[in-house]
Length: 585
Image (cartoon, rainbow, N blue to C red):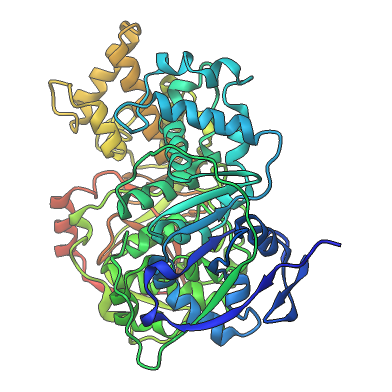
């Protein structure tokens, strides 16, 4: 019979623990029902089996190792203790000497994956993962990896990489050390190579297909780590396996003096990032990123301070959305709220405007329209009406109604954007369909020009920087695009085609075209219906679509309306339209 892990539990005031005294452990819970025994202070204690696997892997053979591990250091049966510890999580990881990342046991893909990571890291220029494709073809990894990094892709599909809690654990720790079976390694290159695969996916597709969905969450993690630390890529030296573990549980000091740590990213961005990860408990969509917020944000945000594990999932998700609006002083968080075409809006138990607990699905969900237009109230703070209405299902915001939907077209899918020609034909046919259903036509020919302004993201503009004419002029840009059909061999034109096609897909997939009663073309959520209203809300970076329902509205999602994104026209509509309060449920 194998000897059980032996641990000693010690309660230590947070403010008196220097960084060198303990390390944290990051691991995946897997099946929470699988439990096993350890000796804790000389008594049998049942814990998650995956926690024991992690302890067995990181323990030292020659001396005790002082660790903080959530499965033992937090009483998971006590909601009050869980809530208190969650609010301290940022400090717990930031104060540690380093974080020990346990990915699980090795399999037949592990060794090959590490060889690939090592080869890519070695071939990188100036210590960063910026490789030419010709260099990749010449690496040992490519020549000996059947199917082009097949084992590496399998490695990145490990469950640990998909779990939300690991995001803050890795981002906040001063250093991260990885463990997988008998392998021990520096963790930063693992993240850096994933981002390189993501960024170069299109160039690699011809001979080593990369599904960006496999590494999207890892890329977010790497970028957070880079924003917190100056990422470096030192080599990985092998280290042996050892025994016996010491574990500490932290408690809140009588007079709380948190260690202030800088906030890595705006609250709404962190909620958006959380959609790339899975969580067993829906409430963890908030609690799993709480440590990434600054101490000041948590202390100053009265909405956030009142939320604990004693609240329901609906209450927590609604509070997270309101807290993000309050903290960021804008409505950016609402840009990430969408409804799928098969959802029954009337049957939703969560407020229609609240952040959802599900993971982003490329096949079903629309990418945010990430335009922060000052004309749409980007500098007009929306906070004034958040606190006066304590109903967790109600959100009260001020703004203007600037349009109403008359007709809707079909929803766009990924297949519509396999090529720029297909995209152009698909959009043109959709516009003509709407025109055939409406008496009023647009004042200008929007078949070729309507969709060009909506894709003016930084990525698209970057591809257009060498165009001698103003790229924001739809007519000039259309003429430039059409020239590539005459001479498709021009490399820059092919790159332009690809960039614009990518932006078109981001904008249109899982959305549908709409026609307003004033004859303007718009694009909005797949669940849009006639008589939905287009509104400009204070603090919103884009228009939103709302649906009147009795004495309130339900939130439908972001939209874009041709001709009312312009600042002068919007200011005109503001002058003609009285500002009002929208009660959204």
